[in-house]
Length: 361
Image (cartoon, rainbow, N blue to C red; front, side):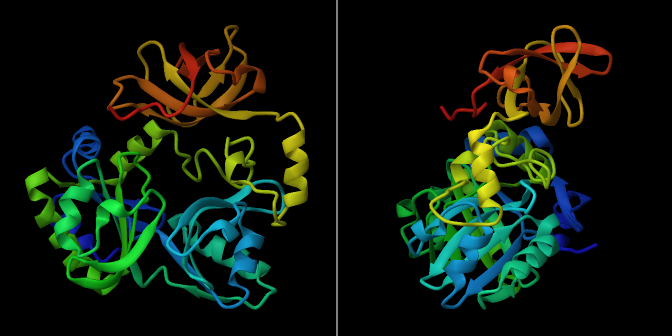
């Protein structure tokens, strides 16, 4: 099992460590609800160094990125990032990712930890244009500093004006005494903040200074369990749960990141799919009674007939009710539709709702 450069730090902090995507990762420290609320109300820091980073360079870098991703990377200027996905050849999704334009001919692709090898092999197989590819995943660390107080708490650590970095924008500058780190206004919590990309040798210094600077703001280390509840409250898809090699971007509600202004892997078939009626759709739902939805639970209609499956579910720490995502037949996908979640032997009533579940006050 792999480790991040901060593994010993997490253990010293009393983290509960679990295997995740081939890494030994902190799932929680004080508890999911406490950590969740910390990010929603102030600032927390996650070690997400297990994520993968690929550098695509050269005169044909954009051509390769355009070929393997669904969004239009030509729209990116230097210092901007975009959410995208890598379609496969059969209508599903190899992975979802963030694409950064570092220089005119340099792109950084940030992919999910469990898919690093799969993504690398897939992109390599499509690289018939001679773009230079480098897998930096084992050499770079990633911290997510998230929460409404994140910018204010971290401003003392950089000479850059962190308040001026817009959502899905980034700069390369000094941070916590380290030069040339990527400071990116991205994250998967919906509460604002930054992601910091640095070398493995630099991350312990950055972690320590982040924790020190955040002390007056009540900063806490946050585990993967709270990361999951935070992202689910926003309705953000988790690869392996809500999207995978069998789900199309349109079924998953990700049509907004599929741009037919260019040609890309399986774009012709996806274009046809967009014109046709989908067989299933990913919906968000809230439980109307007691009960917690979990991945794999059946979704049924009023007569108990199966109409889909839960892909993600939890008791929302912010809303204090059960929430989830799941695929259902299209006729049950309209907002306000009444569905039922089979929790053990009981059919618990639920309502299809509009995302996000959580809205900042």
